[in-house]
Image (cartoon, rainbow, N blue to C red):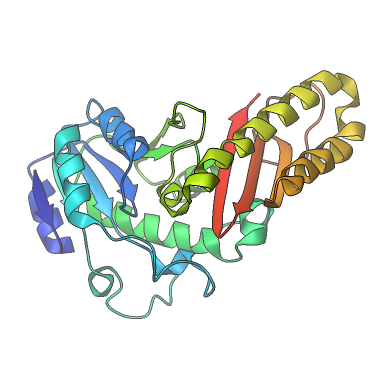
Amino acid sequence: MQIVHTIDDLRTALRPFNTPALVPTMGNLHDGHLELVRAAKPLGDVTVASIFVNRLQFAPHEDFDTYPRTLQADADKLAAAGCDIVFAPSEKELYPEPQGFKVQPPTELADILEGHFRPGFFTGVCTVVMKLFQCALSEGKGTRHAVFGQKDYQQQMVIRRMVRQFALPVNIVSVATQRAADGLALSSRNGYLSETERAEAVQLSLALRALGRDALAAADGLARQLPALEERAMAGLAARGWQPDYLTVRRRSDLQAPQAGEPLVVLGAARLGKTRLIDNFEI
């Protein structure tokens, strides 16, 4: 496995290949990330994982400075998973000057749910993903792929729309959320949890599953009953010491308010102690 730190070196390494598959990450890798690499392997003729903690998607009060940087451990895991190239640029390499040009996603998708509680988050995500696509996928001559995890449900939808509207020659591949034995969605931020908090953390996924069951049971009365169901789900988590941002049911197509008979997804974000966790389930 080759580790490169500059865009020029990455493009040189990729030049012999035609169908690269990219797995964008912020490092501090866990089994969920490695599953993305394993899913990427059969898609193309070279597998690339990027490791970059992107300042643009962090608000000033969030954990950019303390987000774990574990490049050597990450590289060892990626090598074992069969990754071919690791692209680990410095901030100066990826942003050699202030990033005045940014990708602004539409407000109806980017300013709800995660975007409501993390203003500017999806602008930062789209900008860095667009840049990573240009760095890692511009040299291919065949189908190029980018692999993302379904845990970041809204993020994946935003990126798919960006790719479609900019006519980018990139196939977005979705991989199911990887979970611990008790059902907790794997996340780099799980490492922030204390032992007691880790035991409690599974309650977010349990609350979302319960909300999903209640939503399906409501059937034709979903639109009328949903506000009360969501409020009850959030109150249940709050009573256990959580600080929920949202637990909600939306339609899968655009994450807007659902109607009866539409494919649905239940999504949630809540803070446990100092750690903010997210999860979702299609129902």
